[in-house]
Length: 370
Image (cartoon, rainbow, N blue to C red):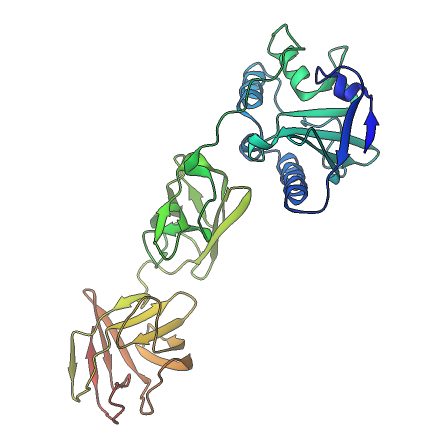
């Protein structure tokens, strides 16, 4: 334990020498280090939507008011975070007030927060006073108070706002970008939805207010309401489009490949309707063609179970289809995986192919209708 009598703590309206203790290795310290990394990344991105979720409501409100008065665009730290920004020391005061050091070259600022803030920053204490308009400021809060015309720089910060329960990453496996299609054609308007996987209970939609930093790269544009991505009509078939956002401090991204407007695309999930020219004991209840030329066959679907899977090659001009098995839970001994595919009016026909059967008997000359 050591005593610190610096002006930093005086700015916190704490009198006299303040005992502080360096934090031990463990989850609390790792949380503060992670917060510094998030802060550095948000500062360097220069995106207010990235920075705002890290700050308590009172700081966010004052930042918005400063932006409205034309004061936006400056780094939140006393130095330019693009020069260098990395975690430094972590320590606490009285067990509930915590500090994390932000190093920037020869400068050292501090993030001030309470455990109740759930990883949100209550103030940024400058290692060197920042000169603004002929005045020196020791923290972001004092600078913002002056910028928005408030008088009481010594007033204690208001209690932090309670976190939005809908935005908390509790009980989820991963976030992803959901779309309303598996086929991304030239000129198409694709609906995009931020989603969370909560398996085994399913998936749920993430409220848009819990996301930030939306962007699209490639031959497509994102609508102003962040719900629709429109692919350019002249996008080159095979071009890659990436849709990304940030949630709970983490990047989330979907990439898809553009296909020609009128191209025959097998992507989708099909159920066998009939079988002509041969007989099989068990119908194919799920034949799935996935992006990036992947397929799977399932006779008795159950949760994520698949019988066998692999890669496929399809020539839309000739209709030639070839499946190549790469693995499986049950791979029939007798398979004929080269033939022709025809897709018309939502019906898929596979000619001169045999996808196998649970009774594992050889067949030939089969035509499947899905």
